[in-house]
Image 1 (cartoon, rainbow, N blue to C red):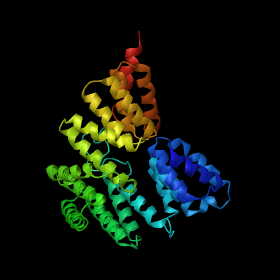
Image 2: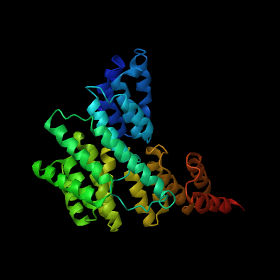
Image 3: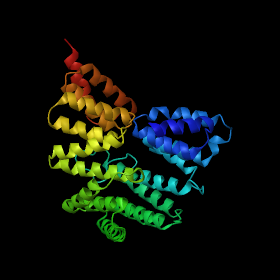
Image 4: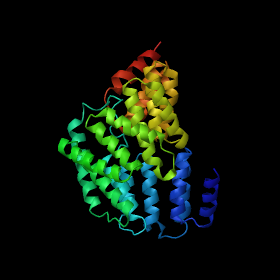
Length: 347
């Protein structure tokens, strides 16, 4: 709170200090207050007509769009910061992450059976391949200027290989992650990448070992993103083995450090649903739906389903309409939830 107030004061005096704005975006997200951010963009625009062309401004807008579940908008803004000496490296890093994982899924996570899986498998495959080739093109512009950015480049190249889901590529990625992890003993990004590679190669016990190491690592803001990803992946593995208590401990930690971590609420909802406490499932899915900014139809589906189970038919119908407005062909929601809820309302 103190840091947020300090950054507020700085930006009221100098609204186009984008380094401060970038830090404020992260802190507001972690406090669950992303909706406060657009006002700061408006404030910055009043400084001069050139602000919308500034790389720092576009970088901040890109990061904000990414956090509210608009990957294409995010790429558009980050692209305008890509060539800049201050913001370029970081913009390319985030663009690569978005290309490889536009829906911000838990990489390697398999606890949720995928709702829309059967309907658009080929289309999804094509989009994934496009994402990988765009990411590879972007990395050709990533010029490391320090040992740590050299490592970052190697990790990103490995993640591109991993994302192809071809065995030889995944094994090559694993090999390079092992080298990096050996050279940099407690590197959080390297251990996370290593765990993701083990999961992709179906070597779950080895993945779990790396993730448990990360669960013991101290929390620092600079590593926060990767630590959160590692906790979510370990929670996913625990959920698959029905070790819900262990999963919940990690998920609560995610939310403690990032109130906007909608994935953590989604997993908590999933656990409550499995335990048939539909009211608690609704509470968590509602938070997941709120903090994913209604961008993820799978969460809307689960929320509507649990409203139905909890006999809250009007609410179930409302959420179905929200999902279908954005995703008119979303599978199963019409017949499995909407029509059942309507029938239940009729006297």
